[in-house]
Structure formats: C-alpha cells, structure tokens
Image (cartoon, rainbow, N blue to C red):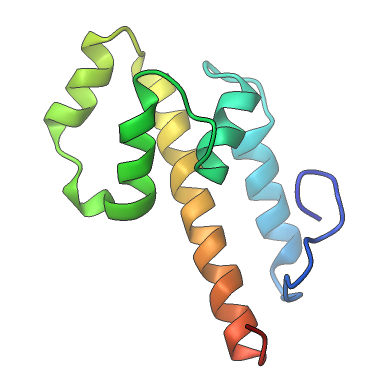
Length: 111
C-alpha cells in the first residue's frame, strides 16, 4: 500500500513492500516541521512552492550538485534545519521510489 491506498497500476509487488510502506508513512505523514502536504509534494516532485521549488528539483534530479550554499539559501530564507531535512528526505524518497518502480516494471516485462 502507498499512502493508505492500493498500489498504483504497474507497481510490481516486492518482498520489502511492508518496510517501504512504513518508510513512506514515516517520512510523509508523521508530524514534523513541514506539513504532510508539502512533503508529499516533494515526494511527487509537483506542487512544490516557494523556496523549495528548485531545491526539491535538484534533490530529485541531481542531488550530487547540492552544495552548502543551496542549504544556506533555504536557511537564510527562513527554513529550519529540520524542515530542510524533512523535505530532502521526502524528495529523495520520491525519486528513489519512482526509479525503483520503473526498474521493476522493466525487469518484469512491463513498459
């Protein structure tokens, strides 16, 4: 299950589905500095607003390019270190989940 719903079409069942679901629940829905809606937007990579827009895109697509100045920009802009951590985790988990699902579909003959 993902976000308390059935798996999306094309999602290949795996032996770690329970652990992945728990990780997603912990990162995306538990109480935190940022709202669950903001973290879910970062996870999906759409609907991210304000200072987070370019940062979340970079985490999802080119995390190796993030520097201290990228994080400093968020902190100077009023984000807390906890908020940066939460949004980073959500964006990274979303990107990893997307890539895992795509790889598993290809491995199992899907497109």
